[in-house]
Image (cartoon, rainbow, N blue to C red; front, side):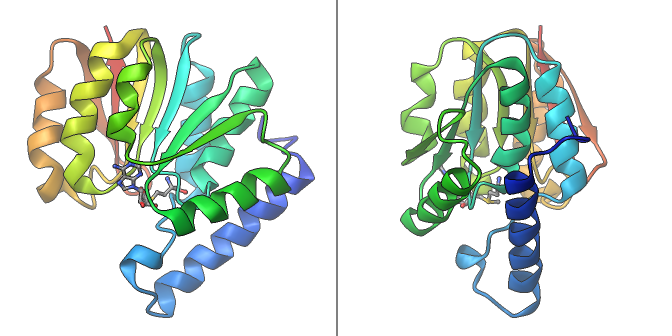
Length: 196
Ligand SMILES: C[S@@+](CC[C@H](N)C(=O)[O-])C[C@H]1O[C@@H](n2cnc3c(N)ncnc32)[C@H](O)[C@@H]1O
C-alpha cells in the first residue's frame, strides 16, 4: 500500500503537506487553515482501515482531503468507498480538486454539510475517522457507535493535544462497554475504539 502510492496521489499529498506547513507559520486564520493530520497518522489510519471489516467507511472533517487520501488508498486496495463530510464550502471545493486531480472520484464520496445530519443513514459503519470541531465529537460518537458493526473501528484525532476539551467524550469512550478503547500517542493522539 505504501510502496506503490500512485504518482498523482503522492504529488497531491506533498502539495497539501507543504500548504499545511505554510499555513501554520504564516499566521493564516484558524478556520482557513487545513489543520491536517501528519503523515504518520495517515499511515496509521490506512493500516487500521485495511484491518476493518467490510462495511461503510466514513470520515468526519475532510478539509482539503489529505487524510481522505490515506483512507482512499485502502479503498482502492479492497474495492470499497469512503464517504467524507465537510461543512465548509471553501474546504469542500479544495477537497473536490484533490479527488479530481488524484482520479479518486469513484472511490471517494464527498458530502458537503454537517456530518451529524447524515451519519444516521449509515447502518453498517465499519471504519470511521473523526476529525472535526471538538464541540461535535460527543454528538458524533453517540451517532456512530450504535450504527457500527462488530469489529468496526472508530479513530478520533486530537485525543492528546486537545485532551482537556475532549476529556468528557474520551472518558465516556474509555468506559463504554460497547467498545474496547485506548489512546495511542501518535501524531496529535488518536482515540481508537473497536466495536464489540
Ligand atoms: C481538523 S480539520 C480536518 C483535517 C482532515 N481530516 C485532514 O487531516 O486532512 C476539521 C474539518 O472539519 C470540518 N467540520 C467541522 N465540523 C464539521 C461537521 N459537523 N461536519 C462536517 N465537517 C465538519 C471543518 O470545517 C474542518 O475543515
